[in-house]
View (tube, helix red, strand yellow):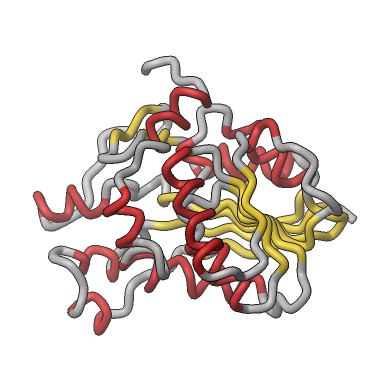
Length: 243
C-alpha cells in the first residue's frame, strides 16, 4: 500500500470540483439523505444551544443542517476547495457557523469544549486516523457525545459488486488497503479497529447503527441502489467521553 500522509490526502480531497460540491450542498447525496443524516440527527437529539464540532465538515452541508436545528457550530475542514465552498455559503446565507481550515490531527484553539463532535465519512479518508479520532474525543467536554460514520468495513464496495454480480463479494477483510475514488482515497480498516480505538480513548459506546434503505426509497433511487435495502453500506457509532 502507498505510504500516504495527511497532507497528501488533504491535497487530493481538497481539489474536488465545484460542480460536485454544489450537487451535495443541501443535504449530501442520495445515501446521506436516506441513510446517514436521519440516524445522525436522531442520535444527536435536541441541539438547541449545543456547541457542536463538525470535524471534517467538507462542503459544510451537515454544519448547515445542524445550525438549522439550533446548534452553535464550528466546522473544521482542511481541503481547500471544500473549505472555500463552505465559507462562501456562510457568507451568502449566514447561520453563525465558524469555519476553520485545519488538519484534524492539529486542531487549533476552538474555544470551550464541545457538547458533541461529529466526524461523518471522515476517518476512512485520514491516513493518521487515530490522531484524528483522538483529537475529536479530546475536543469534547466530559460526558460529551462523539458520533462517527464510515462506509461499513464489511460492505464498502457494495454498489459496484452488486451491479456486477447481483450480490456482494469480497476477497479480503483483515488487511488494510486503499479504496480509490473519483475525489480521493479511502482506507479500509476493520470494525474492531475503529471500536477498539474508541474504547482505548475512554469512550463508552452507546449505539451502533447499520441503516438499511427502505424498499420504497430504493425503487426511487439510482440504478442498483436496491443493494442498500439488503446489506448495510454504512456504520454509524455513537459514544460518550468519560465523565
